[in-house]
Length: 172
Ligand SMILES: CC(C)(COP(=O)(O)OP(=O)(O)OC[C@H]1O[C@@H](n2cnc3c(N)ncnc32)[C@H](O)[C@@H]1OP(=O)(O)O)[C@@H](O)C(=O)NCCC(=O)NCCS
Image 1 (cartoon, rainbow, N blue to C red):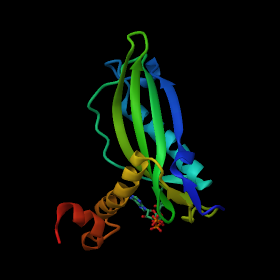
Image 2: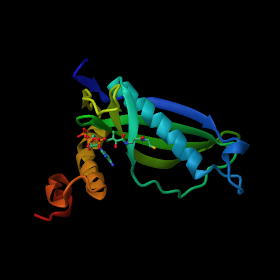
Image 3: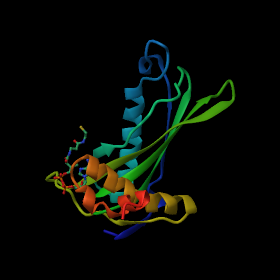
Image 4: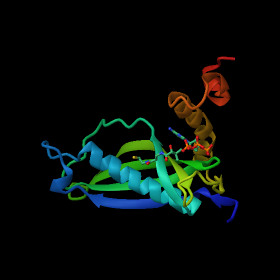
């Protein structure tokens, strides 16, 4: 297995149309349906980076500020921002488009974490990720702080060990 891969090699674009079965009683996309699509597109990006089976370890906070209407076309873009040992952070951006009205809006951005697992469902080592563009570098650099925050919240890391995270609050 190659030990390094470019961030762009994991890029995935998925397009869906909001159909009646996807909606709530207000004829807007159900939040759970959107999260399902986000999970799928992000899992594909994580698989592309790791060339492995992956499982969802966590999804960072997703807020629903803007409804997506029946008939809208939803585009989900996902790309791995950084790879650690067995886990990867994936950035997902969602846009909704009303094609007849010629209107397109960015509705959601989120980070999910996936873990590559082997045939025994045990975490397995993944290639290092190499960012190239300014946006990829910014996402790569922020990923360590976000990882520490989610591991502290999941009680998998002691707050005092979250050195990168503390640095943004100037606690030292
Ligand atoms: C995610 C999972 C594989 C972690 O297994 P584990 O035995 O706890 O393994 P470890 O403690 O060695 O952690 C493995 C990696 O997962 C990461 N991880 C574990 N929990 C995490 C969380 N809540 N958020 C982010 N990353 C997490 C660890 O940081 C570690 O990353 P690293 O290898 O890059 O350093 C395991 O908890 C699992 O299988 N969960 C169920 C996954 C699933 O079914 N998802 C679908 C949703 S129903």
